[in-house]
Image (tube, chains in turn yellow, orange):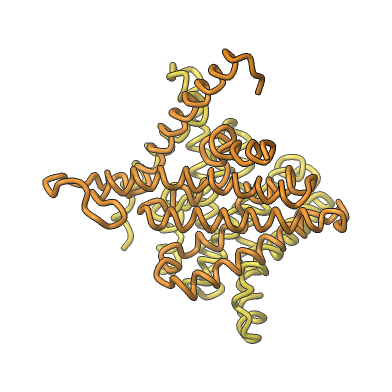
Length: 192
Length: 208
């Protein structure tokens, strides 16, 4: 149990995917203009990442490894995740229309995204068991949500600030992200 | 010929994938800790994007618009796997350093975007040149970031000591926060540069 908890906390704060491993930056900078959109995006990414890591692990262990075709991992994972996201979108639309209205569009946006592909790949590379993969993926998703919500809150305040003309928009967003990353370094001694 | 040059050159500054379009940022921050890594990544992406543009442009009349995105993704994934295997065979050390970010080239928005916006509507040669231009712009940006980070953060360039040994390396430039802050300022600098180019063009009476 302790193991899983450490893995989870590690994925959320210590090895935060956005701020220390730079995955998912396109969404991170694209969506963080708006706080409620960021929260929706965070939820969508968490759901997709957790479920697709699980499927990716199963496919990798029971199909790719026995048939000795692990060099196809990248292609298979990309297609797997893209089709899984499509399916998830349909299911959500059919059974929970309210939920679909809230984060349906974000689901499709995350279909081909580095963080969603990156986490299953990292799980496979580190030889995690199925349960560990799921915990790691869930933690990564929560970490992503945390980072994007923090960032969106900062950017809402930033709108009132007086920023040099050439740094407006993307430039200052990067600098703020740098400061966030710096503060996340405070966690780095927490878990070995 | 002039048409091809203008297709090529727009990727370098005015539509630079990293500084202007802000696409494919993950590698720009993750693998630019040294110049060699940055250059390898840049060239790999240039290879993938121009080859993929070529393939997409060749098959553009055969592909049903409804299924085009999965087809583009399959094509990109195939080319990336080829590049990955090549690097693994001929430069295993570099392959290890780039690690997961090499596989992640598949989901770079810039590659899919060029296929969708340009290659699916143009003949093979301009498409290839467009991919090459975008790839070079990407490599250029990676190189700039890589040089600054390696020199300030480690005092070396391509592994050789360039700053006097009394210089204490600013470790933050190698770590994540330094990368973010540096790119922030570089985006600002490229904004200024682009404004100058536009002004110069406007004063000569050209339209963009």
